[in-house]
Structure formats: structure tokens, C-alpha cells
Length: 167
Image (cartoon, rainbow, N blue to C red; front, side, top):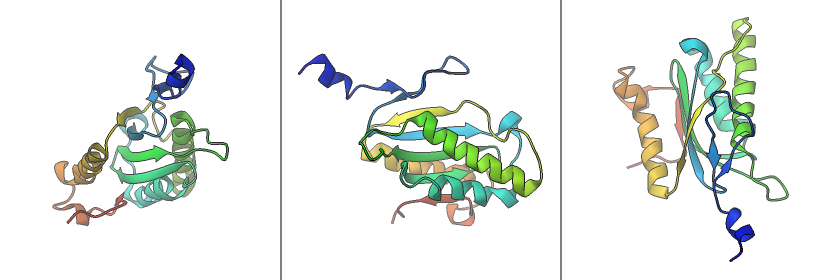
């Protein structure tokens, strides 16, 4: 196998420019767990959390296969597998996150009649390599509202979504 064949499977930087010099690596076809936070820890009003969840889950079906997402008061956790364009080129993490954060910020600001940043520029991401790690991470993010004391059970929290139900 040539080095050109191998380079197709290696993790690649998701963008060419980073705000905190943190490279975001993206392995083609691999699922990502991402955390992005509100600007300066601002608490998202409950009235817009459903809109943010909708942008994560429904706005980008050609770009991502969403496995789960939760919108917390000051951060969001989506778990997704990037899709690819008509030529088989995978969508980059930066492109996906700019889409989710950009459209949701525009909606939040419009609905609340405000201006300014909604999200921090950077996000944290982690590559999930197995189906089991995807399931574990989705279960983890869906349990987040319970761990934070916001609800007694996951079913009570309206701002989470997952593609399957355990049990």
C-alpha cells in the first residue's frame, strides 16, 4: 500500500486556522462527539433551547448523520457522523459546526431581539471509533441534565434527542 493510499485513512485537520492553536482532527467516516459553549457562559433562555436542538438535529441532514444531541443552559453536545457531498468528499468539522452554530445563533438573536455572539468560537471534539463508544457517548450526553440536577429523569428534559431508545 502506498503512502497516498494510507493518507486517505489518517486523521486530518478539520480546518486550517485555529483560534487557540488547537487542531481539530477529523478521521473520514468517523463519528464525532462535540461540545460547544455559549459566549461568556451566557445561559440560553428555555424559550430558545428547542430551536437550537432543532438546528442541530434537522437542519443539516445531508451534511451529518446525527446520533444524539442535548442543549444544556450554557453548552450543547451533538454526536454525529459527517456526511459527504455528491462527489464523495466528506464535509469538514469546521463547515458543519459553522452551519449549526451560525444558523442557531441567527435564530436565537432574532427570536430574542438581541445582537451579538451566542457561541464561543472554539469547540471541543473527540473522535469516536466504535459503535459501543457512540452508544456510550449518546447515553452520557442524554444523562447530562440528570447529573446536573436539572431533572429527575432524562424523559423530563425536553431539549435532548437521540436516534434510538435503549430498553
